Image 1 (cartoon, rainbow, N blue to C red):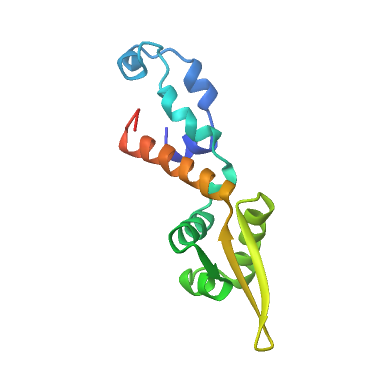
Image 2: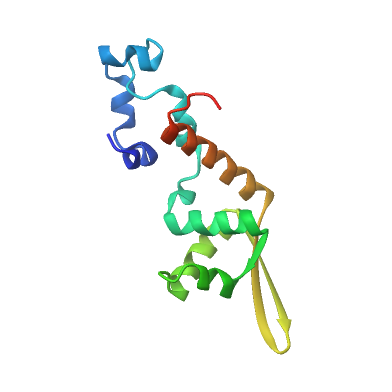
Amino acid sequence: MTIISVITGFSLKVLLTRNFDWADEFSGGSGALIHEDYLDLMKASTVLFHPFRMIIMQTLSFHGSAEYRELRNSIPEMTDGNLASHLRVLEGCGYIRCHKEIVGRKLRTSYELTEEGRKSFAEMKISLRRLVLDESAV
């Protein structure tokens, strides 16, 4: 079972319902392979689990806001169209807010996290930390 399988939920139901004697100690006696504290990760929005979206969210979380060109320059592997698509998805979910203004006859587009985006990203990071560091309670 890989982390990706846990994140996407692939085979999670099967693993939670199968009985594994050796997993009793890990799971608190329920026989489930995955500790129920890790299920918080399954509640997180799958929209945030794309690597580029995580980078965008982390950048906005750290800096507060960023212009489109700053985001594009900070992720050189991403094309303009690809970046725009990821930003639209995050904006459509209410995780980021777009601001457009004219500065010196040029359009300046900047992005910032919404309160919902900040909360969802923080919850996802806590859940990932628990899974990766094997912390059942933080």
